[in-house]
Image (cartoon, rainbow, N blue to C red):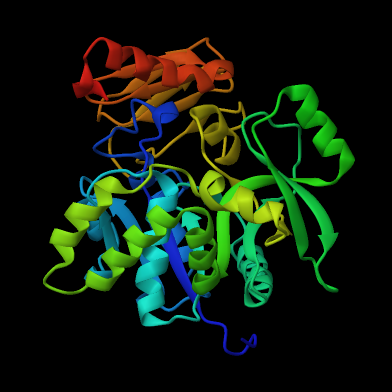
Length: 372
């Protein structure tokens, strides 16, 4: 396939609950539906908007769960109804991506597909689009491309890509191995070596190449999504989906396909530097959104109302999320996260933002699922 023939289909994965952003992010209204972009747009809307120079609206799909399908459709009112692919239950990223690939392959067997998380922030849309186009070049050659982010610090919260030889004269590199989230010392050695990139969980490939690799490594999953895709758009779609979907292996695409493909030289990457952030917790959100002179960040504050939603005096480095309609006031404190929702309030040090998930786990143990 020549570059002139290459056509991108964008797939946005809208799943997960974002437990480190509790109590704002809940199972019924997860983080990708919230306006955490510094604008009125939700993370999901910003993700779809980011693809508008890469794929026409009829070539953008969202894969989401049945619990979120109505909210996704409301937020993406102009998206064709048939482009919202609904999972009956969560089966992890490989099943979601494979379903989209199989459905797209029925429309265009030679299509190039890009898979993107719905809950990432990207500051430079043009640089992002340029990297995707470079990745499409690798995909046209049959490689499964994964976007790598040039690391700016030793980070223990991300996986890494170990890079190998260049592919041709451009920026494309082979990926030798996927590395799990490392210790700080190991992460520091990765960054110093210059041979590692952050694994951003974004992929670009020809759908036929991905489905072939899926069949090689995960034949049960490949057969299942093939059966679902064959019934897609017919009167049998719901029945086949209901029968087959629960039987699919619950596994991430990294474990299911990408690690094995890298081992046989079929994975490539393009280093990217476009202001990427996975918005994993409130501390991270405070780092990427605009702060006041004292380093305080107010997330989603309504500045147009007659009454203030936040009142801060002698504070530094706060991340405040006013989401209840009440006034949130703070004085004489620093480096805290304060999240106010109608039925739950979170207060914790910013340095412990990653531990918020433990509160959610404890609520589950207590049987308090109404707060989750």
